[in-house]
Image 1 (cartoon, rainbow, N blue to C red):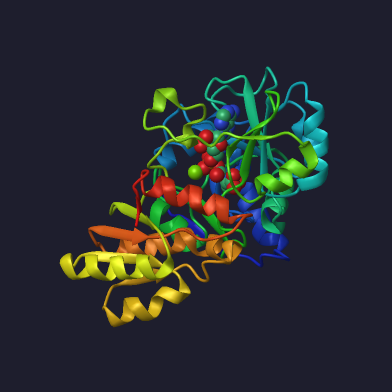
Image 2: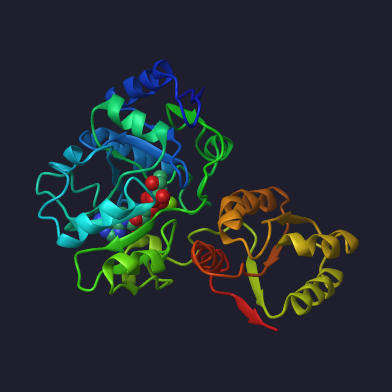
Length: 345
Ligand code: TXA
Ligand code: MG
């Protein structure tokens, strides 16, 4: 399959380009689309063949359910069942935006989408291209992140094609995404609601609307024990093992430089204020930006991990961004990328 790159404006997409991609969706094809978080691999939620094609293209196990993306509330008909009161509060506050809500599914929704579960994940993305594609397709779109299973999520069209060229019909290329980590997933089928994945909407913002909310982003090594498959450790892993160091910035820098002297094939997933040390010690690095700016670090995270992957090093070392907000989601992704390997200095 030849995967077409369709270049579009992120803010004002050309209707002809959107129509070309929508025609592929309507034929049961799979098209990667930009959202404000990461690129998603989209297909018609009402077409069983398209849903299957998404699992196949990603190499994703059938046990890992898909998010249904809508452009308006009318498209939730036939997708969701009885909605809890918290849904109205949260959608009012955060949609369109990086919040995915788990709610009871509609009985007629394809069970492959929810991997046989009773709840469905729904989201209205805040991106002109995604919204235009959903509208032009005339149906809700299922869309997992557009990466091969267990690879980092894609934040630009090159990442998508590096993983999926030849396996998808097209990618709508609107440049880099603006948030860089995936949506927050909140389970509204329990009381109080539980955050299952930290992401674009920080927990503290959800708490201002809900009052009571539990952060339940546990990580488990065993697929059978996971409340949601995305909770698995080793979900965002580069090929080389990652180790996170905690401590003062000078102690981390000194430790990493010492390590690099002992081991040559090491790379540093670093911050602005580490670059001088990395350069001086000739340690290959990818920079995440300022460690106090969680939002900026989030936009660089997956791209930087892919850059280090391309170096074919045998070890990656890093530390965590500071602060609240989206930085919490970045710390979560780093923890998973490191499979929990944290060393306190
Ligand atoms: O930002 C995002 O959420 C991106 C963009 C494309 O919208 N999508 C995304 O999808 O990250 P994905 O499939 O890579 O991650 C969604 C995760 C799944 O791995 C699964 O753990 C969880 O959402 N999920 C989806 N439906 C679920 C369900 N019915 N019950 C429990 N967990 C569910
Ligand atoms: Mg994913």
